[in-house]
Length: 87
Image 1 (tube, rainbow, N blue to C red):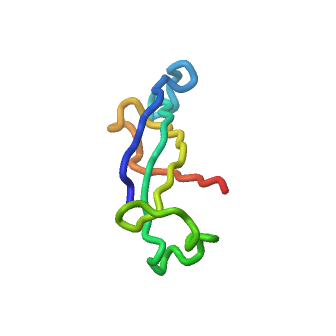
Image 2: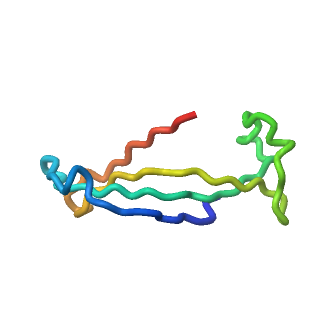
């Protein structure tokens, strides 16, 4: 469950250059914070989650940095999201 998003910076991508029909993009950097239930079956594959510290309601909290490339004019985009995860 996502609990917060902190945006640290926003800047034009590639100096504001246009990319075909989608136009210019912006680069957004930040941190996403979330919490998950260590007892949920979908989280069984997370190594050592049973040993992770828990908050007051028993969830494991975590944070991850992100970089988002977004069309400056969302109406010109194709409505798709490409997600890449590093491990």
